[in-house]
Amino acid sequence: MATDHEVGHGRDITWTLRAKQALEHISEAWIGTSWTVEVTEPAAPVTARPFTPPTCS
Image 1 (tube, rainbow, N blue to C red):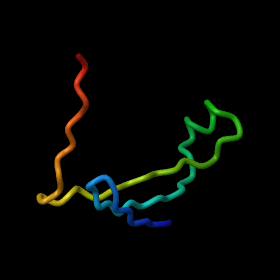
Image 2: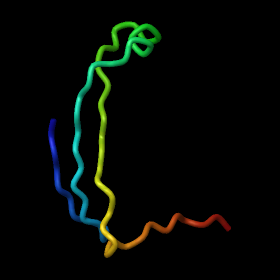
Image 3: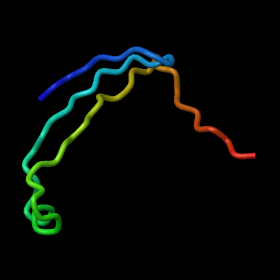
Image 4: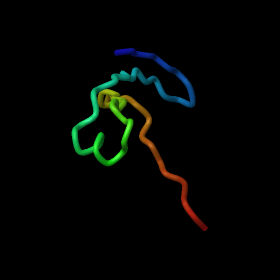
């Protein structure tokens, strides 16, 4: 497991990266795949700037 803390673009994020053994149906569907990677980030604090998606015009 690895963690990283990044500050940029008005965001302050700590994320966790963890490798896990692939589930059986994934290994069967993709021969040679034995690991999956999980990236998680705890919920943003209430004081965080909300994400505003770009609008199309």
